[in-house]
Picture 1 (tube, rainbow, N blue to C red):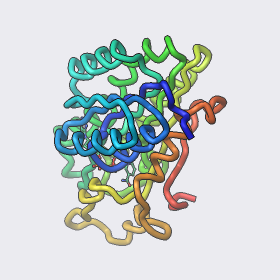
Picture 2 (picture 1 turned 30 degrees about the horizontal axis):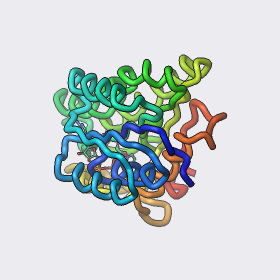
Picture 3 (picture 1 turned 90 degrees about the horizontal axis):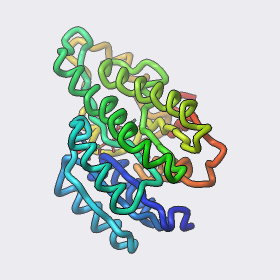
Picture 4 (picture 1 turned 60 degrees about the vertical axis):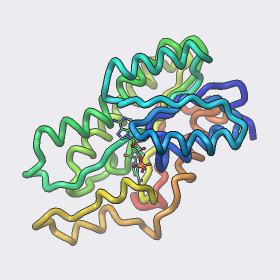
Length: 248
Ligand SMILES: NC(=O)c1ccc[n+]([C@@H]2O[C@H](COP(=O)([O-])OP(=O)(O)OC[C@H]3O[C@@H](n4cnc5c(N)ncnc54)[C@H](O)[C@@H]3O)[C@@H](O)[C@H]2O)c1
């Protein structure tokens, strides 16, 4: 399948896990790529993997919570080859008892996960409108049901979900679709953040455990590629849960 031949995709969080797998999947399907992350070494690894598929790849060190850095990256990417698809994947996770969550923790997580998604969508929208492109945001099962000890993260992902639905109705008639994928139980480095805070009730763990087992980030990449492609031309404002049935 070459669903992204002659199309340019922007992917944030492309240095690791789901972002890296998404970049590779889009490269395998013919996309030109503009990849962003704060991890230079990981970006270089992803670039090499995408180039092995013959893809034209640009990488940029961008903190998605930094408005001017995002604006510069999106503007430069659009000037170079236009924008057909935006995948907002960058994210951070922290486990903490709600009572000891500091304002700085909360703002840091909202800053990357929600503000970052907002900034990239806002900067890219005029370019997406020119080409009837589309957006795929990564939310989480944490936005769909209570996950203990992740109040900042869950709130940020709930915001990403609401932002997705808003953009879907605001821009759907103008030709730009916006959808989300809600992963759960995907084996990536972010899982290293897991811990039960001191005094946390271990009985709550079942709410965040896989139904059967963890699976790799390529399963999310496949869902992103579907939503970002013309196969999903009639899909707008959808949240595709890819979690092995954990929330079924
Ligand atoms: N792994 C799961 O089970 C799971 C479940 C639900 C949602 N998610 C979401 O999937 C997305 C990808 O996570 P992952 O599992 O691949 O984890 P990961 O840690 O492997 O990847 C996250 C990437 O985001 C990058 N990043 C962090 N802060 C950034 C910033 N300020 N600017 C730019 N890039 C930044 C990291 O450097 C890293 O490359 C995240 O949004 C995460 O919340 C993952």
